[in-house]
Image 1: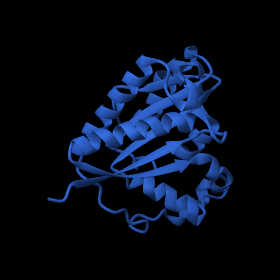
Image 2: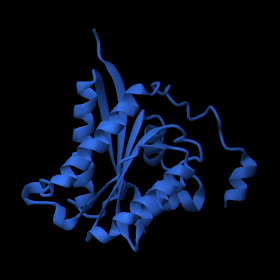
Image 3: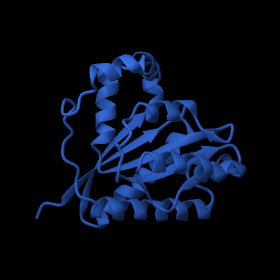
Length: 208
């Protein structure tokens, strides 16, 4: 019997290369893939590094016309069965690059989508940004955010990118399990037709 299949898109807003944000995204992805596999679901994973789209995002915000590469990325996110969204925390909130990307995602494009939110920061005192910044953002977008969010401070990582704090390992596993269960239970999304609901020309003019 062929296993059920679900698509998972991972959005990482890390600025460095490598970055702790991408490191956390990778750990969450691996744990989610494992839980999906254990449930008989074959995961199809796509990683989106927002730093690669920074210039295109700025141009899209100014002109309301995305580049083909950026549009293809947006369509992949909107067509996913599940989303992992990870941002570094700057000034007690998500990064500008992270916000810029979700500013160009259509208002109800993530409605009902199982979503795991996570963040990284220099110290644990930034962890509250998950609840007072990221969770409200995805509530506004009508995403179905899982109960457990994950924050990783610099001191949580050991050598070779291995989580040094047992509580972080447990939190990653719990959040990934919640997301995997939600993705498996959710009806697979139909392929998205980018021409099905074009923006009226009047709205394009107003967006300028």
